[in-house]
Structure formats: C-alpha cells, structure tokens
Image (cartoon, rainbow, N blue to C red; front, side, top):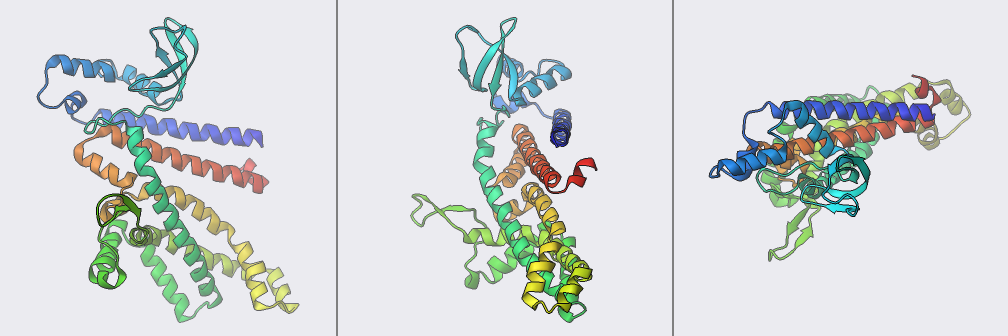
Length: 359
C-alpha cells in the first residue's frame, strides 16, 4: 500500500512539473514587455533594467526557468546577507524560515510558494488568489451538491419507471444538458431567471457571495446570488449523474440477489434503498469526485457571466489586462487542486478496493 501511495504521489508531482513547464514556456513566448507593464510607459532605461534584473529577465531562458522553479518550490535556495543570524526572512517576495547554509553565502529555506506580483495592481498574486479562491470553492461545492442530490433522485426514478414518458424525457434532457455550451446556458439562465422573471424570483443579473448593504457600509452574505450560477455550473454534472444513476440502478436490478430479495417478500422501500441504490452509487460517486475538481477550473465563464468574484472572473480580467503573473498563478493553483483531489480519490480507492493497487 505504501508503494501504491508513493507511486501516485510521484505521478501527481510529474503532472504538476509538466504543467509548470508548459505554463512557463507558453507565457514567455507571448509578446509584451513585463518590465514596461510594471513600470508604466513613461519610465527610464535604468528602471527597466532594474526590473528586468529583479524578474531575472536579463538571463537566459534556462536560468529564468530555474528562478521560476525556485520561486514556486516550498524548499528553495536563497542568498542572505547575514547567514549566521538570519533565521527568519520576510521580504517583499518571500516569507518563510531559513534552514541551514549550503555554501557560497546561500541558505536552504522553507517558504510559501512565490507566485510573483501582478503587473497592474502590484499586489502579490498569492494574495489575489487567497481572496478569490474561496468564492470559487463555494460555487463549485454548491453546484456539485445540487447535481448530486437532484441527479440521484431523478436517475433513480427514471430507472424505476423504465420505458415511461418520464424516463424518455429524462434521457432527452440529460443529453441536452451534457451537450449545451456553458457560456450559452449561462446567458440563457440569467436572461430567464433574472431578467424575464426577476420580478418574481428576486434574483440579480450579476452579484457575488458578499454584497454591500443598502447603505454601502459593510458587506453582507447574499446567498440568493449563488442560486443561478450554481444551477448553471451544475447542469452538466447533473445530466451525467442522472444517466449514470439510471444505468447503474438498472444493472443492479438485474442481479440475482435482487430477485432473491423480491422472492422473500422484501418491501419496495427496503429493496430500493437497502440493496439497489446502495450498490448502484459506486460509479456515481466516482464521477462526482472528478466533477468537483473539474468545476473548480470550469467556473471561468460562469463567474464572468454572473459577475461572481472568484478566481475564474479574475482570470478573465487578467487576460483583458495582459496580467501574466495572475494568469500563470491561477492556472497553477487550479491545476494543483485538480491533481490533489484526484490523488486523494485514487488513494481512497486503493484502500477500499485492493485491485486498484495493482492496476
């Protein structure tokens, strides 16, 4: 089991390293001058040269990549003016603890990953992500909860009414839900739910989890702004959960132990919930765990349409402003979350099903 966990951890680290390489190469071949974006158009050559030295842009591409890795790595090497006494360091860039010297005036440090600074706001990218990521997480969890609870119920009812008009309707709507583009569905939902029916629903065209009160003095929780974006983001996983639940329940109903339970006179409720649904939910839970990670990355268009102040909306704004550090940092954080969730799911399956360890 230990070998299985170590193997999965190594796979996850390799995926992260591959994403870091792709992100670095992709955004370093794009046109634009980061130093001029930071300093502004009206600046002197000396300031531009200082910024390029600070960012490591005056070095070769290989050296820039090593600097970038050193910034991202929690364990990194740093040069200190007084290695004997500088046990803690907190600079404009880094925040962490110096461990021990490695020679040449350098020390090994344990620090927070440094995602660099925004070109526009001059704030640390980590601070921007720390403010926006929780709202994206709330939106993703709400969408998964909506898709799971409603999808299992609808899929179970469709399986128990196989061949009926409801079953056929559920299959048609599920196919539409899977094939509908998220940005189009989001525009349609906000148009119907907040514009045409806004007088009755009370929903706003745009809004986030926290809004200012009527006096503009303080932020208050506004859960009604969560309904439409969570519904939009959860439509596709809802369709998948309905189809998976239906097919899985139908498969379980054909098993011998279900026929035996019927022959023994087990009631309908016990047959459905104690035997059928319990054994039919394994593929559904597998899909849900994958969707949670996907929705963290797939909320970009939904957040932009509904004005939700999450990491997806921040990415769109950064693209519009050509703020590369924010885009790169956001992509890396989302990838890390995606890899971590899938890694935890793989390890959990390894504990629950020994066959997975040898697959």
